[in-house]
Image (cartoon, rainbow, N blue to C red; front, side, top):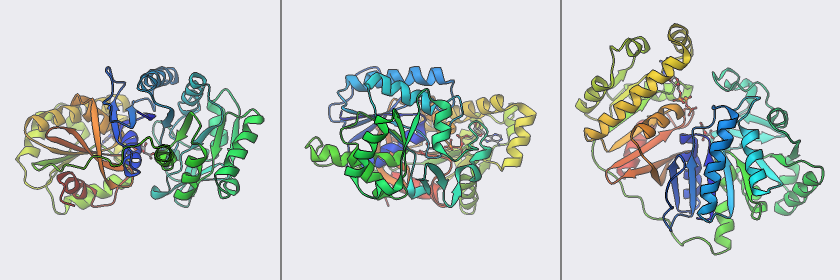
Length: 416
Ligand SMILES: Nc1ncnc2c1ncn2[C@@H]1O[C@H](COP(=O)(O)OP(=O)(O)OP(=O)(O)O)[C@@H](O)[C@H]1O
Ligand SMILES: O=C(O)[C@@H](O)C(=O)CO
């Protein structure tokens, strides 16, 4: 294994795996820190954690365990993947985890860059934008767990970190890798270890990747990985070709717990021509809707059936007030996990999930440990093989076009 990655959630980790696979590295996503050794042909290993919103101390401890395992597999470079909208609070977890990994690796000049231009996230003058809006005006200021009210990443990170934070401006990135290396040295000389890097285009991310060829640690969204495979290839450290994708025939189903704008549009679009089953939070909490009934309904449908709890923000808030945020989240996680187990036992071979928490609950519920990465379904979402007869697509809330669910099942089948 050459590149060792630590992702702070499951869908975000598959986003990173998608980028690395597309750029030609043989990639495996591990669910949590694995016990045994990785297969010898894995070039990039991604340990997917659920550490985005846990207390910082837990996130640090888990990330260090993941780092130890990745070091044991022989990796020469490490990447900490967090969300392209920098989801975190003033208590962490991005700063504390980045600093702990840097301590363990003796790393200086640690790039911090959540830019992901294909999905509209760019960093300019140290500020994070979503499309043409500052992060703090993008809707992310209302996120229930990690509200992002300050778009200046240098300040956000400064509040989470022990050390001071530097900046690598766009004007320097635009001059290419030599200028970037010189600026990283200059920031290091000023005592800044974490350095927020501007990037607005994929080519900026490739410049950063090239400049970082010898750095032990990078941090960012999946975009920061764009330029890394070329460094390993230039050193003759990659196999010539990634393994081919093997499509999977058989019945499909979709489970959606994401309430994001993008997912709600996908659910509406899907409902026009496929069977859909809404899951009412009150019925779930009262035990009137259970996994057995949901799975039986899905298994009895033709086409690409969908069960969803996705609801608009006002309904979500009202349900949370009635039942409590944590209790509701736990009930939906348990429902989706058990439904997924019953679907796979009932013969589903193509399973699509929407939402980071929801996908995490499903992957853990199914007891999966290793995910093989296939072709891209949409920016940030790959096709995944999870077993001899099981394929998956794990979609982050905000990703994918309106026809995502059908497109995903077609790509999993190998017909697109
Ligand atoms: N109808 C609903 N009412 C209240 N809460 C809901 C409802 N449906 C889902 N939820 C909760 O909303 C959350 C959805 O989180 P999830 O991470 O799956 O999606 P997301 O936030 O859109 O995705 P991502 O993390 O990838 O951006 C879960 O905690 C779930 O329990
Ligand atoms: O970076 C992103 O936006 C995604 O991979 C993600 O982590 C969303 O939860």
